[in-house]
Image (cartoon, rainbow, N blue to C red):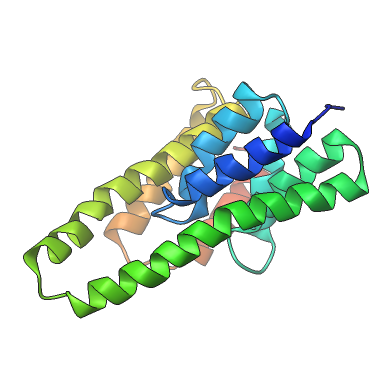
Length: 190
């Protein structure tokens, strides 16, 4: 895939991540649905497989979860012209997603810690829980449906629902569930 990007497009990429950074309450992964909307559906700078692969590779690699943003910027840069633009795309995406959220987190946590006894601060913390959960569910939905996982592929959905229930209701370690899922995939059942 080859795309042509102007200076305004690069600025638009940076600005989108910059603004999106302020909404990444549950981490950068919670903003993945909007990243998909912008990069794949809106601008056409990435394909669905590139988008999903960016997240999958970054999540499988050791290190911070935000690495998928760098991979998305890298892929946009590669699609726009090669190695030099890949580094520029990666740098713009990472700077855009990291700078505002880091500054906001720093100042908000200092203020929240100093005012932790206030009823409004406690209510805000409790009210953010359902928002973060909804953003993570939306991310899972985009990743599942954007990669051609249809509802007719019921074994995958069944494993997902059963795994979620087990995590919610038991103290079984997640590595066991990952191992079982890998075994089911290896056997061709999902």
